[in-house]
Length: 201
Image (tube, rainbow, N blue to C red; front, side, top):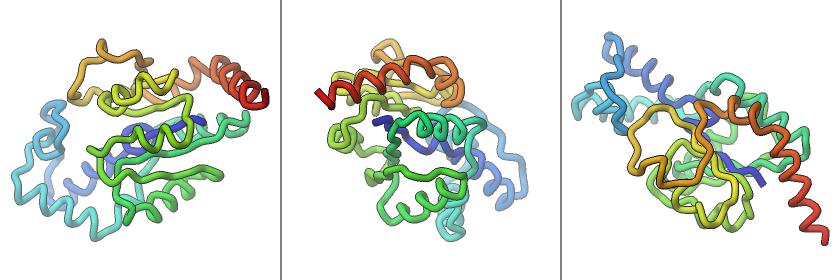
């Protein structure tokens, strides 16, 4: 089982936030730093960030995110090679239907989707339950939580502020899902075949 985060790995939440902010505030949304909070990153005051998230929710934009270049194709190829896919995403269950529809609108089928409640909730219980052998996320803390559990960890480094340093975690580091998959395609095939053989013995 290959488990993937969604925002920051498959779907581009930040780009949708930028577009909405420019529409609401009639000014360019310029990235000022690499801070985790969008308010800090784009210099928004508390009233502006509250308005932005309120509009984001009311317009249902979480269900209208665009994928990163090559992400959907990489996942589809994994599936064509017989690799089961699960998305483990840090959002509330009230958004599960919208997220499912968004992924399907991008062309994905035959996947599992788990919502952990928020970006700060641990993903380990889900990952352990589904028996993931590969986990891909853009937040180092989620990778750190499962580094003894999952053999193949992948960090998608978007240049954002992190709570941990990459040196503290044994994880492959790549700028995108598509780049990682192109570099590790054969390794994944061999890993998948090995896992299938182990389960059949």
